Image 1 (cartoon, rainbow, N blue to C red):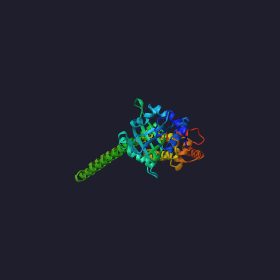
Image 2: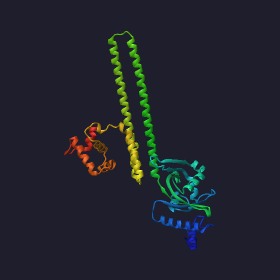
Image 3: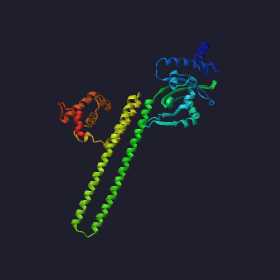
Image 4: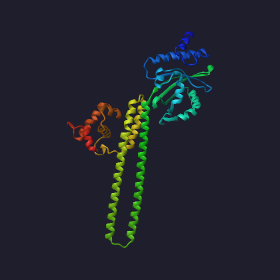
Length: 374
């Protein structure tokens, strides 16, 4: 517990808070003093996170800072005394991610600036109930620029003093949030393409049904008419030709749409999945990204002309390895994706070369596979 001498020393060192200089319990003052000392030491470590210690009373009084990182206030372009008002007035958006558990997706709750002001009291009560806070904020800074910061803190209660303390840190996560927004945009674009494809297929099916109805009517009318067998045969040949043209056109349109969907998935979604994988630090995030990539592969797989359709004597695992080699994956990447050892991947590559007839030849395996799938 801090001594009176230590408390006086802290209040003399550019202290801009309220508690140490106010009429509060010694327990609370000692806790604040210890936290400030620890946060000053933390600032000297060079950690990119910004430490802070904020406080408020139960009766809806404004939040103030007992300590806030000098690097943060310098970055924001404000003073420690005005940091609370600056953040309150410049937060544009708040996002909170709730992990439900199991197979349920992560629930994202987004609150804009206007809603934040209206629900401030309710949010504070929820934070006090949970005893912690973890959220991401979009903050407007100087010259029209914005940044994303992640807030992580624990809440302590001092009922005797009617004070709540928030011990936390802010971390800049602008790149991660921008990548998330781009991924969501790409997912919306993919959904739009899929809906468009379904509409085209439905429209084409309706036209085919109508065409079949017309053909049946024509055939019925022709049969009723007392025309010669030759005329009827010629008419049927013309009808068959027309049907073949329609079916060919339908297949061509379908193939073009499938290629567009696959191309957009590879260009608009896969690069961002790879970027997220590079920035992911936890195994849960990497697992979720792997599931996302696998599901996308399942969605577009019916549209892809796979190597396996031309090389019927491959085993299922050899087909998977061949597809990844054709995509330019390294042996290590293939091993990681298929949960194999690198030696096992090399054995599969050897078998593939043998079955393709290029064993002991200088032919490049990927180039050969690409030529087969083209």
